[in-house]
Image (cartoon, rainbow, N blue to C red):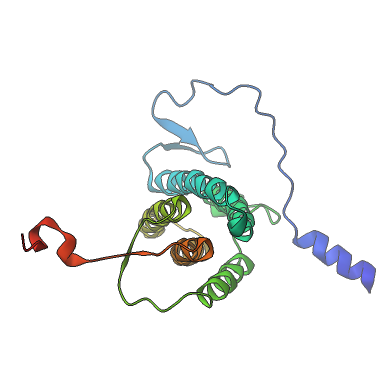
Length: 214
């Protein structure tokens, strides 16, 4: 029984990457096209490419937020979570770069387990926060701002995936994951300030120039 359980776990794991990046430029994209994982040539501004390009951009901003979190001992748990999210985003990019007919059974991808974990993360962090009585603005700490930047990029990536899904087959887990991740990034931005003992920056409509009484 134990051996069978181990075999099932091994079968559920993704294949390890097998690649060698010895040469960075190839000149093959100079004409405005790129290749999907299956070798298909597509324009660089195709919706699928725009979508996983935005996911790649999101990963970079999550990396910046992770670095900000690592600089604060109180945010160590968040830093570990953000590092996990970076791996998940790369898995997401892998599946978005592959047409359905070329997907390997053990290819890296986003799964329902990843979405469920994000939901648990959201609930755990949100349980420590006071209810919101106003909209909040990015600010207070560097980590808060970095997480808000990542949140807005995540929303854009989600919009691009929704648009791409109207034209071709994309895994439904991809959109759900980004939707949940944007919520998580918002909650984590609030939690970062909370953990560091810094007040949130609340939206005050009359702080605008047009709302001033002077």
